[in-house]
Image (tube, rainbow, N blue to C red; front, side, top):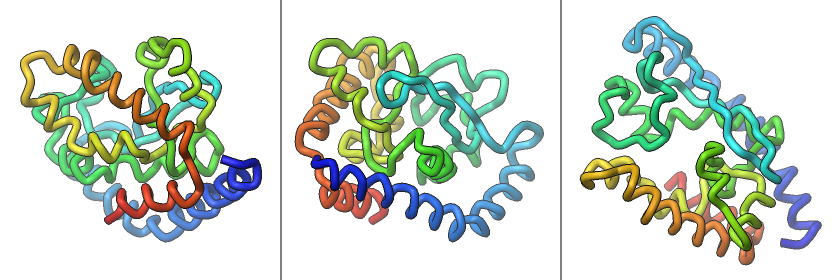
Length: 198
């Protein structure tokens, strides 16, 4: 991607993030009210440290979908995970729990399109050429995210979800993200956003 395209992407990310936050605010208020009613006590937002561009840690924002005491115990989540509360399952299935990541985009920690940001334990596994992925700003959506849009359902069908993720899904995501690194374009990002929404 040329320097001019990167600058356009940079501006596009922040403009869309700001507009998205403004437009979706009433919808977020409804989710907040329902969340408080059905999810009981606890925070609405969930923050977790992820690895961002150039390996720099940052706090990612999401809507809380799990029981508070168990939220950070396991980084591999399946669709039938008993840590996920009923309303949380709906939010995760529809990806609505990730709407607040627009704040991360506005702050500059993330992009609309890019590799999903990993936790330190997974980002540390990147070696050699694969580490080029860390030169990218992580995204809310991306080519790998689209391929594994039903990842939690897929993991629920295997005997050892963590092993399957570590040996099958994660290496494939790295391959897809590396292909994105070499072939990314602004219009390619627009296509990914369109496919994510529709």
